[in-house]
Length: 195
Image (cartoon, rainbow, N blue to C red; front, side):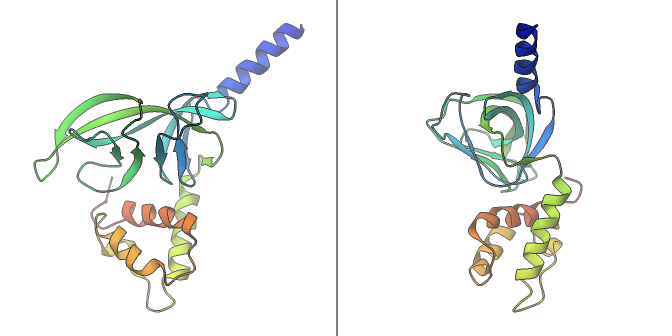
């Protein structure tokens, strides 16, 4: 009986979150294995992860995105736009599988990939809408002090990071929330309809 209970608890702890789609609430470290504490990458807020299994305080995740052909240290949300999902160390030895290849509207070749990595099991949510709502409120409440806040759809996904960076130091948006707001603005930009 005790042995069955222990096996059941072990299985439950491994399967907690398993098979779930979650989103990162803040910048998170990526690790090559469940027992590694050496950060080999960073995952940005609002990034979608598919949880494969839980190992102690870490989860094994799959992250889909796009890599510019020949560039192995950055995964983007969509091809042709600088919406970063994950930045990877050049010394990292992650499992990255190429799913397909295609060109963007400028003729640049992109690989659709899936990265398998580990991250701590905290700061994950299944509620993307609440993350976007929090980012939108931070943006509107802080970026309308000196002038009317620009609508998210006023600029393109590639224009927003520099526009936001030029003004953010004049606001009360804390450093840990800046990536969240940038991701919100980029993913709601005028050229991101239906992405």
